[in-house]
Image 1 (cartoon, helix red, strand yellow):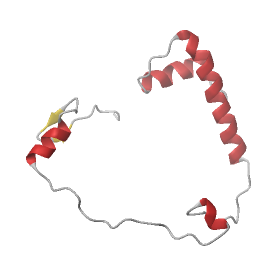
Image 2 (image 1 turned 90 degrees about the vertical axis):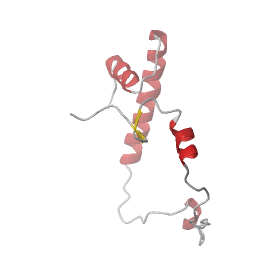
Image 3 (image 1 turned 45 degrees about the vertical axis):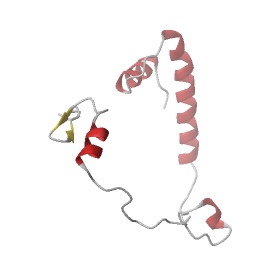
Image 4 (image 1 turned 90 degrees about the horizontal axis):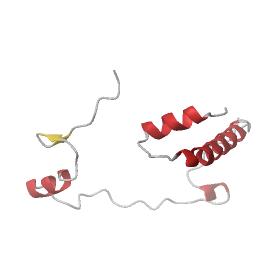
Length: 102
């Protein structure tokens, strides 16, 4: 799959990234290189290969170190207000986001 300049402009707009016209060619090349690598990876036959939980689990038994699932912070109105202070839009303590699906 080859991307075009229009694809790069559209993706930059969707990601809200300001791209200068002289940067578009570089980004286009980088993205096309990434897609070429993905196509090469998808061409590999992985039938019968079990997924790994850890890259080293193919060589040895690996025990995952998981932390205990406990509450470390208590909820408070002040903490909530502090966390919501950076939100561009809120209503009744909830984040408001623009509608993206019509």
